[in-house]
Length: 96
Image 1 (tube, rainbow, N blue to C red):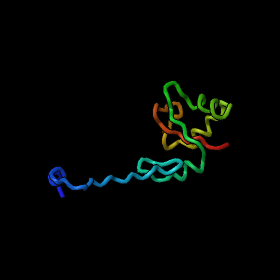
Image 2: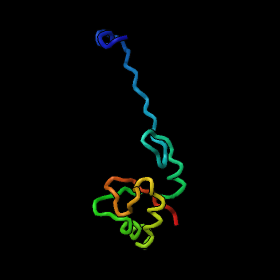
Image 3: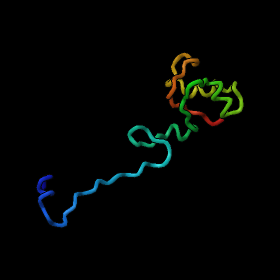
Image 4: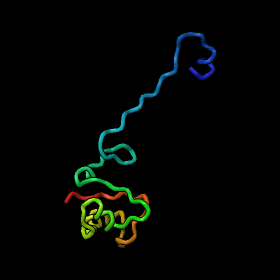
């Protein structure tokens, strides 16, 4: 049945409503798959303007010197220079 058939038909036929699947609870990636590693290792944090690893560590752990733990958990995301984090990066905050 095409669009014109639907419009010209005077019956009680209605278009099929697409089913939306609810988002799974917890951490998921772009495709909705559960992110097991993030859920098992701790919380996540999205970098905002003015952030540094020491500021994030001070805010979440109460000790700026714990920035090393955040860096170690996020080397693949941050890269070789821990001073170069970018706005919008999602970092894993390990449980200490």
